[in-house]
Amino acid sequence: MKIAIGCDHGGYVLKEGIIKLLEGRGIQVSDKGCGGESVDYPDYALAVAKEVSDGSSDKGILLCGTGIGISIAANKVKGIRCAVCHDVFTASMCSAHNNANILAMGGRVIDQDKAEAMVAAWLDTPFEGGRHCGRVDKITAIEREYFK
Image (cartoon, rainbow, N blue to C red):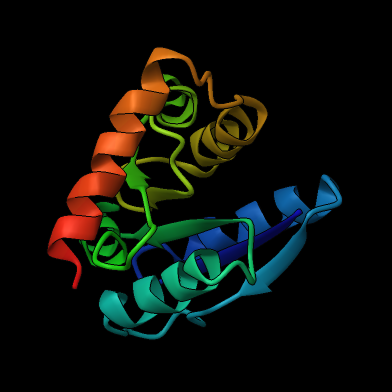
């Protein structure tokens, strides 16, 4: 598995620990930045979302101060289902029910231990399919209609 990860300055500290977690699980990481300097989160959201959208990476992780702005930007890319989460339950559920292919978190909202637990829950929880397939299909239909 390959995961693209990107952040702005608000998520940099979390990024470094998450990369270690991923590599410890034998996951290949595509680090899309940043290096801790003040930057604009849409640039990093786009870099990660493009890799997930085109299949260069299987999934993505995005980090900013709250996770909100970077997730909004990522969701502008066709095929992306980016969920901003703040706890293990929501990280697990976005995978199980929404088949989220990018997880977004906020470095000013959660600490390193919680972020790593959230990443583990997101990775370890499979998409349930079943009744959720129709809902994800409806998201894709909206995307086909409005992403022209």
